[in-house]
Image (spheres, rainbow, N blue to C red):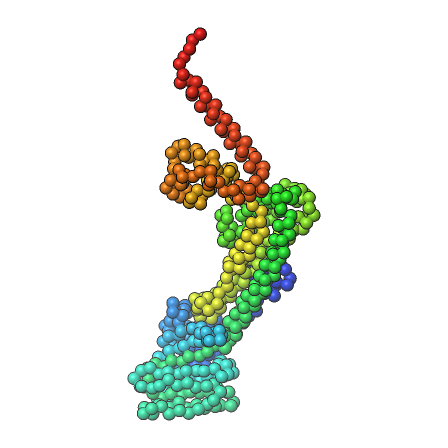
Amino acid sequence: MKFGKTIETNAKELPEEWQPYLIQYKLLKKNIKNIVQELDNTFKNLNIAPPTFLGDSDDASESTPDGGTDAHSIAESSSTAGQAPMEFAGMPEEIAYNIEKDSNGLVHPVITVKIRRLPAHQQQQQHTQVVELLTVAGLPENTSVILQSDGSSDTAPITISTTEPAATELGDKSNTIACADDSASNSLTVETQSDAEETQVTVRLKADQQFFDQLIEYIERMRQFEQRYTKAYNTNVDHLSTELATVTSPYKQDYQVWREIFRLYTDAQVWNRAHGDTRLSSTAREGQERFNKFARHIESLGLAQRFQNPMSARVLMSFYKLNLELTHMKLLQEMNEEATRKIIKKHDKRTHLVAKTQFPRLITIDTTSLTRALLFTIYTDLVGIVPQIDDYLCPMCLNIAWRPLRLECSHVFCSRCVVKASKRRMFNCPVCRSKNAVYRASISNIDQSLLNFLRLYFPKEIKERQRDIQRDISEEEAQMMVVHDRSGPCIIM
């Protein structure tokens, strides 16, 4: 399927009000034809290259690494099957393409052609170099064309305008530029008579500039939409956060259901592959598929049906909607990034200019920063409201920290685990190896605020852990009694 058709198909998945912010790939593709025509006419009118230099031909010359084009390839392309070689005034020695950016942020595509003067027997009219500029067919009005000679004559650069014919006398070399305005052909002919071996011509490309102006306009319009959407998104998250804090209170009956829902959401890794990593590593398609799988899992467990408060069902639907919008935003950004990449590639292929290395330095499409910020907001302002037991586990026994004891290095362990470590003469912190942190711990190191927090939000887990510890202590005491009995004298009655 062609990319233009792919965009049209994928656009149907976006909300209707979002679709105008897609880059219009087909329209830009049509504009490339105007660029090809402009370049073709420009080289014709400069009388230095045949019209077959540019176009879709597979035999077209390859661009050089610096954005120019090999002069030998141009010379070879001057003759095609069924056509006689064209005669032109000079041989292009180097063609350079550059995209300039002014202080106002506008881009100006420019081509610079260095023309080598042909040998005497190949030139017309006594070593005269003729450059004919057709303002209607090739060069846009008010476009600056700069001719600069570089050779045996010491001539200054000459700037002429396509709208103001003039006659200029140069230096002591008697080199003249005769400008004639032919109303019949609407052309401007520039004739130079000098001993210069090389002439440089710089032309600003109007059609190419219109192409990039349109592309940049699409990108800027997308950025403005992202800014407006971000404000609305944050407002919705703030409102949803307030409602979620109400229904997920530990004193409410729906708290345990919400804790299970958010645990499954985190385990589903909808947008990231690593637990707790909020960097987006999934495409829009992958994220959508994972979220749909998560939603189906919630439905299969019947968690939504266990809500006691009707507000919880509405909050869950709002949470689903936020994730769906995140999927749409990611898809929109990916489509625009791909459209930009492909249209620049198409531009370079059709025109034989090299914009793919220059345009990204002028303007880029960031497909990760916004969606990463939105995802971070979901985790911190929504999912983070409901504490998860995995965030309060003892690093030694990997159970909930029963009677949490905070060492002087700030690491938290079960009081039971600290006692065991001390009995085994493990006096340093098991995490950071802080010297004697375990040895110096006492009952005063118990984090009372954390203890109250765990009792409030994890009462069931705390009770189960307390029973396990009590059973563990009883088993140890029983073993000690057995060992003590065996150490006494044997009495036979």
